[in-house]
Structure formats: structure tokens, C-alpha cells
Length: 454
Ligand SMILES: *Cc1c(COP(=O)(O)O)cnc(C)c1O
Image 1 (cartoon, rainbow, N blue to C red):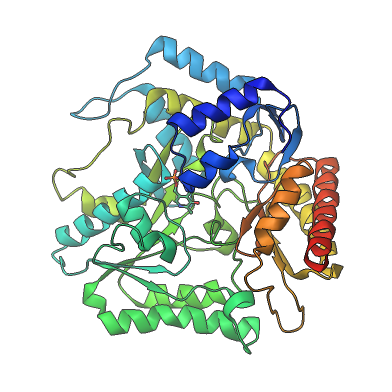
Image 2 (cartoon, protein in one colour):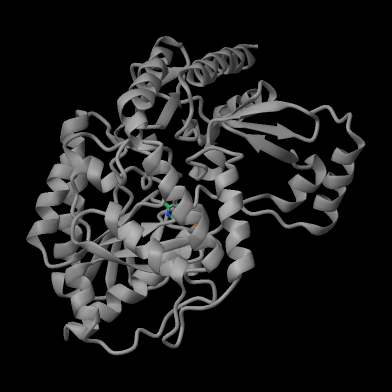
């Protein structure tokens, strides 16, 4: 990248001298220097070199209402003046957290009327693990400890979050997963479906849950956790047969079902929650990201009434965070939900933006490098392959990273998960901006193909 602004170099020096970046190769980043993002508006970012970039990832899946919303800044500053901090421990509370729990109950699926607040999605899943085990202990079934999760699922980066997640490259560092967490196959037909049809494979993948429950013994299983659509794993939209079969299995066995809604929640699928999109009936839902549109950190766990009824009999729940329900974060979340609701942003995703994006994205299917385009709502994935018919990859070439670099250089952020390019733009993206996204994506696919052939 060209560096014409002397400040870019200064900031990169600060990075190399003092900063350790998440999910990064520290040494490599020292040499290369990060791109410095300085400001943003709507669906666009600007870097310190003055480049304007269409943010096809809404930050990290979170900036639902787009950048530059004055109302959110105003909500934060007002709350900071009124009550910048107080906690929810020891029988105290404050209005923003209480009003937010009601606002969330109003949009959550029926019968889910209580929220436990955290500072992030990872903390939401840590809370879930402790709450699930506490729940079964109260019910006199303390052996129901095991949480079943899925390979290549993402549930955060704390010890419990990374253990619940199925990312082997995360497990390899720090002796994870912790005991009591097991993983089953993911419903990733394109990558792992072999000779099965997507429908056959979906049923097969769902049946892995039943097999695992029977193997461990239902008396030892506390819960199953899944993202309705896996995000960080590569926008893995399960085959149509998957969730219906899963629903049968979940109804058959006495275990809790946790939907990790950190990405799917708050409108991403064109419904308030991914579970609404698939008609699922979770006991618990983890939330974060879109809850505040990423303007300020906040997460939580929404809990179904029947689970709360049991927890009510258990005395103290010995768990909480200094920043649980932080008043400034809660004020921002409340305003964010108001914007989503009053501006009918989710209805617009459902009726206009999602059908348009999905249609335009699928036009890329004719590109020689593209093996599959899939997506739901404003989530999309483009699989890059050497051979469409056999779904064979360009092994070892790092095609995803090549494409991602071309995107960056051409004013588009698409993320690469292996050789899968993924997008999740702000929910407020317009049709013109979708056109720009798809045009740029095609150009970058061309450049990538050229680079591979050159
Ligand atoms: C991002 C994410 C998390 C973790 O959230 P953090 O706020 O980064 O801790 C958990 N689950 C899913 C599905 C996510 O995408």
C-alpha cells in the first residue's frame, strides 16, 4: 500500500512499538503495518491515506444501522452526563438496563422475557455455560454438564467461548477445549457434503446430534449450542433439511437449546432473530454485535420463562461482570433498537435489500472462479474453486487472501475464511451500494483469477 500521509507512518510505528492486535501474527503485522481506519459514514470507511472503502462486513458484523448515527452519539453523551456508571450487583439497578431488558423482551421470541447483560458475546456464552449447569443442578440433575457444539462454529474467544467454538486453530493454543464440551459435524454441504445431495447431507449432519446425545447419555448432556447460520466459520447456510430435523431431535431429548444470535440477531436475516427465520424455539439466546450496532461494547443472554422459573428456585447465581448492563451501553442499545424499529430497517432488509443482494450476488455464479454463492438476508458467501463441478480448490495458494487483498486495494472490504469470501454489510445498505459491492466483487474475482493464471 502507498503511504503518502506522514501520519500513517506515525500510527503504524505506534502499532509496531506498542500494540498487540487480536487474531494477528504480531511479528508479521510489525513488518507490514496495519491499515489505519480514521472515520466512517453510512456504509463507507476512510483510511488514513484518504481511500474510501465500502464496508462489506459492517465492521465485524455489527454496524447494523450504519456509521455516523448522531442519535447514538447523543444517547451515549446524555447518559454519560446523567449516570456514567453504576452496577447491577447487590440489589441495585438503573433505568437504562431495566428499560433495555423490556425492549429486548418485546422483540425476542414469545416466552423469552428476561435478559442477563454482559460486556460481549464471549461473556454471554461464558454466562450461558455457567447458567446451564446451574440450572440442571437446581433441578437435581447435576450430571447434565456436557455442552454439545459444532465444529467450525464460533462462540467467542474467552476460555469458554473458544472451547464452545469449533475452531481447531484456536483450540491448539491454550489447551482447549476445556472438559465437558464436545463438537459434532457442521452442516457445511459445499465443503463436506461429499456425494450426498444437500438435503441428504442436512439430515445426516442433524443426526450427528442425536448420535452424540446417545453416545454421551442424555443424563450427561446439558445443552446444545449453535448459530442459526454460522458466521465466522464462513457464512454456512445449512441445507433446508437441517433445522427441521434438528427441531425433531431437540424436542425428543431433555436438553436445553442455545441459539447464538450474536451475528444473526437484530435483523441480519430480515427477521429480528435467526431463530425467527428458521422457526426455532431456543431456551437461551446469546446476543451482542447488532445489539448496539457495535457503537459500544455490550452483550447478553436472553432466557426463556421456564428456565427463569427454575433459576428462581436456585438462590444466588454467583456470576456477573463489572460492566453487566453498563448504563451508557444500555442507552445506546435502546436507541439502536428504536432506530431499527422506527425506521423499519428490518422490514426493508426483508422486503428489499436482502432479495436484491441475494439476486445480484448469485449473478457471480457464472464466474469461472466461483463454485457456489449462498446467503440469507444480508449474509453472503462466495466459494472460490479451481473446478466448479467437483468443488475442487486451489490447494495451498491462499486464494481467499489474494482476493481479499484485491478487494482492499479496490475499495471493498470482504473477509476471507479460507477460500470463502464472505459479506455482511450494514443493514441500511442501499440498492446502489449493493450494485457497487457486486461490481467491485466481480472485478476482484477477475483480478484474482488473473493472478492465479499469471
Ligand atoms: C463475535 C461472535 C461471538 C463473540 O462475541 P465477542 O463480542 O467478540 O466476544 C460469539 N458468537 C458469535 C456467533 C459471534 O459471531
